[in-house]
Length: 446
Image (cartoon, rainbow, N blue to C red; front, side):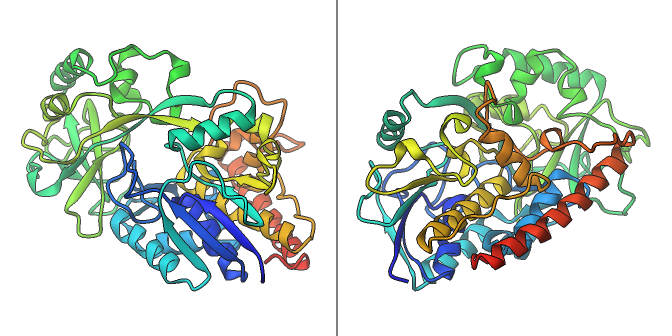
C-alpha cells in the first residue's frame, strides 16, 4: 500500500498501532523521543516501557479487565500476546516481567520491514503523511503539548500521578514475610505479605503522615488521579483508610500467628526470576530519603534495598468528550493531515486500555486509507463502553477512565446478584465482540 502514517510515541498505544498498520501493508514512521529526551519516570529507551505497576490487572472473564483482555486477543493485539508470553505469577492478575515484555515489543517493532523507527522529539506532527496518530502518553513533551493545546482551543488538563517503589528480593526478611494470595488455598501464593500489628501499623501511619514530600502541598481531590493516589494522601483521609484499602488484610492468614494481621502490605514480583518486588498500591510523593526511612518500618522491609523509588509526576490528557469521536479522530487538530489520538493522552487510563486505543486508532486510520466506513464498536464490549463514555459530549468533569461495569449499559431487567450480573455482562460482551469481529471482516479491516 502506497500510504504512510506517522505515529508519535512508542509506548503501549503507539507500538500496538504501529504493528497493526504495518501488518496491513502501511508504511509507518514511529517517532520516539527517548533516549534523546528523557522523562522523570522512564528508565530506558525500549518500546512499551511500563513505568508504574507491572500488572495488567485481572484475567477473570467475569470482570471488566478480563473482558478487555478477551477483546484484545480476539482482535489480534500484538502486545497482549507478548504480555502473555512474558507473564509472571500474580494470582488472578496478568503481570509481566517488565524488561522482558518491553524488549519483546521492541524487537517486533524494530525488525518489522514496514516500520521506520525514528529517535528524536517531535514538536508538531509532520505534514507529509496520510495520517498521524498522537500516542505520546501522559508525559507529552512541552512543545508538542503546546501544539495540542493550541489546536484544542484550551489549556491541556493535567493531574498528578504517582508510581510505587520496587525493592530487591534478597534484602527482604523472609522470616517475617509470608507468601499468600488473598482467599486462595494453594500452598504457595503469588504475593509476599508484610503483616502489621496494630502497634506497628499506628507507628507507620504516624511517620508516613509526617514525612517530607517532594511536592509540598496537601492535594485536593481534583488534583489527583483517583486510581493512583499516593499512599500518604490516602492516609491523610483517615488513619485507618489504608487498612481498608491498599493495606486491607482480608483473605490473609499470617502463619506465624494463625490469625488475620491488623493490616498488610502486599508485594508483587517484578520479574520471572523473582529478584525484585513492587509495593502494591504504594504510589508515593515522599522524598527518596523518606521512602527509605518510612517504608523500612514495614515489617520484613527493615533492610530493604530500593531498585526504584516511587515518583510523582504531572500527567497530561485532552478532554476527550469535547475533542474526540468514537474513532479517536481529533477533528480540531486536523489541518493538512488527519490526526487521531491514542493512549493516555486520549483520556483513557490503564495499560490494556492504552493498547486497545492504539488498536482502535490503527483500525480507524486504516479504514480512512482504504476508504471504508469504520464499524462502531458495540457498547456491550468493555472498551466499547469506555469509548462511548469518553467521547460523549454530555460527559462532564472528565478524568481519565478505565474499563468498569459502572459505565456499561445496564440490562433492561435488573440482575440483583452481583456475580450473576458480572457474568451476564461478560456473556453479552463476548457476543458483541464476535459481532464486531464479523463487521470488521466484512469491511476488510480484520
